[in-house]
Image (cartoon, rainbow, N blue to C red; front, top):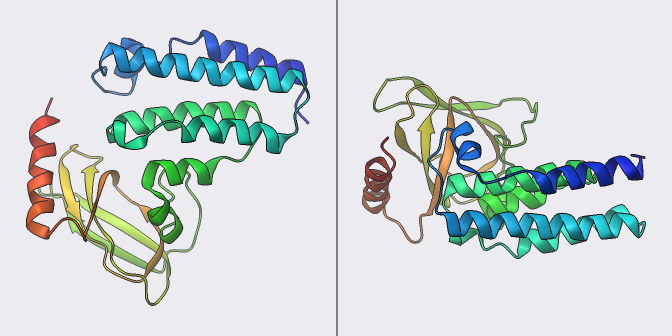
Length: 221
């Protein structure tokens, strides 16, 4: 069991971080979001840390600490943020979960990717696993020609093809559109990262490509 004082020291150090400073965004290769949003998130994480400090001082059990962390995560509406902001938020919740020694991976995956997607796809790009690859899907990046591979680690009959996925090539940062097809239970990303999920009940292929072009336009450096 981790020493109580060590946990408290780490939580207090977390509070002192300027978590959404300009330099913090730039370290991720991103332009800062607006100051109002950054200040709001800074306060939210500090208040969350205060709750965890109080609970740790009161000798709360791990399940109680996890419940506190979950309530703070649930208070953040993921639809209010773009993909890069959501990933940033998840990174800080992940830091807190490690400080208090609770397993928070499924909660973060559900919040980041959506509950349906997390249930159907055990996406392991954020928390990588070592599952055996049974099939590899591949498409060429439309800009640099790199192979964008999706590694299928588990399939199950009857799972619909729910989403278009806008992905970003790790080699040249170009945005591409991915459709994996049905019956995929678990997968792992290859030479790309997921940027946005578009439900096929709401987006035709033409509409998904239109959204892709929007992202290409607005996220160009």
